Length: 95
Image (cartoon, rainbow, N blue to C red; front, side):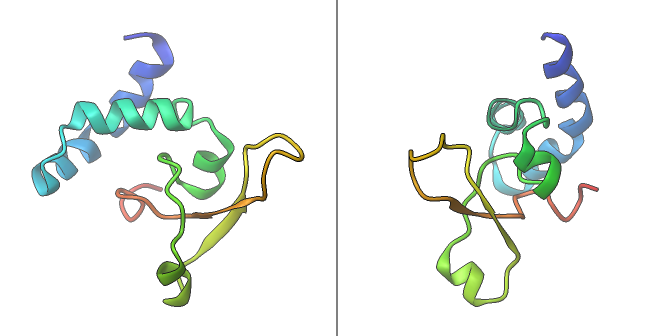
């Protein structure tokens, strides 16, 4: 595993294993998806909103008072900003 990928996996392995025991999703899949979606935790969304998976806020999330952020990685004139949720599977455990 390359440098930054390994650092990410080492940092979040315990959380991924905890979620694997809870939900049955293999930790390796969770870590690989987090690495891909968040550029090893370095994406703006991961750094600013602790959202490593690009999970979008739903209308029910917003209606129930859930926090969200406006974020888009689209180029200008490509599409409207997307409402993104600031929580994801591990957000309560991660600082």
